[in-house]
Image 1 (spheres, rainbow, N blue to C red):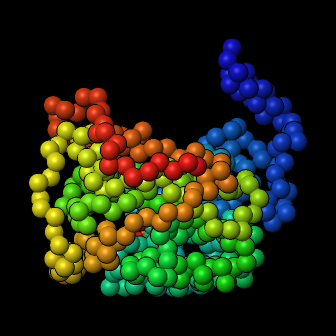
Image 2 (cartoon, helix red, strand yellow):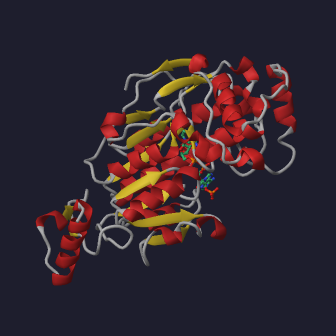
Length: 366
Ligand SMILES: NC(=O)c1ccc[n+]([C@@H]2O[C@H](COP(=O)([O-])OP(=O)(O)OC[C@H]3O[C@@H](n4cnc5c(N)ncnc54)[C@H](OP(=O)(O)O)[C@@H]3O)[C@@H](O)[C@H]2O)c1
């Protein structure tokens, strides 16, 4: 019998006999003792209650899945009925609790977080809409959540920022992220600020965009340096924070290597067996003009700020992965999973082919 099978037998025996052991006792960050119960996994109850604002986005679904598997009850604030439906089956009955909210409504924010011992703020938008500017979402909205969390007495707040957040950035998005960090720290003493690099995964705007719109990644002669990180690594890092002690600091989570856009274009074209794009490099002024015109339809297209960001190298700061107990994966380990769908039918099952890492700028020593 394998070790995991015998462990499962012991756990079943304990749960049948109704006996509890010392490790079932959890002390929540608000010093409430809770006795976890139920079999491990999907139907477990760890005693933690967590609110995840911005749960309906790309990172949100992976974080909710990991939290629910640990037996955490998760409050999932949503704006659109349909956007939270995939989250509900991630936990057993009663574990995933959807609540409608508006980022401008403090009463609703308080309702969403009043029972939680940790609040994650994953709210973000990398383009402006007619209803919200960057500052309204990334700075004012973040400040409101932090202020309400402090007023209600939530023991821990984790705020998602960006690796490139900076007041001096040419991008309004990065500026607003920096402003948001400052306002969050001002309103909530001891917040954890997480700064991931560009994330890749099934629903990303990196590999999918490289495959669909290579032209926009050729800006700046494709020399811009980026530090892509796997979305599951970031989700695991966040999930690990639930069991650790309060982390009152900024945690940088860049990918393990610094790569140029040129290398990423090569990688996607090798993995998908698609020929390299022959579209010429567009000058910045032309790209900005096209992006301004692309703002006329209601659906999101490349924004002028995104064009600006294509010229900004990722910050050169060291990763703090050891603090969150995760070793980040290289993009080559997972990229094929996410870009296989861009292959033609005859190439679909061929083994992946990787380009030489000549265009790699550096591999960070973590
Ligand atoms: N993706 C990356 O590569 C990356 C890299 C570094 C940092 N980050 C940061 O990490 C966090 C999560 O990223 P993500 O990729 O998961 O973002 P995402 O897919 O764009 O999701 C953003 C979430 O924010 C919510 N949101 C946006 N505007 C809102 C508003 N005005 N009111 C209420 N909710 C609003 C969205 O809700 P709806 O579904 O209702 O619109 C969604 O749940 C964000 O703060 C992002 O800036 C992302």
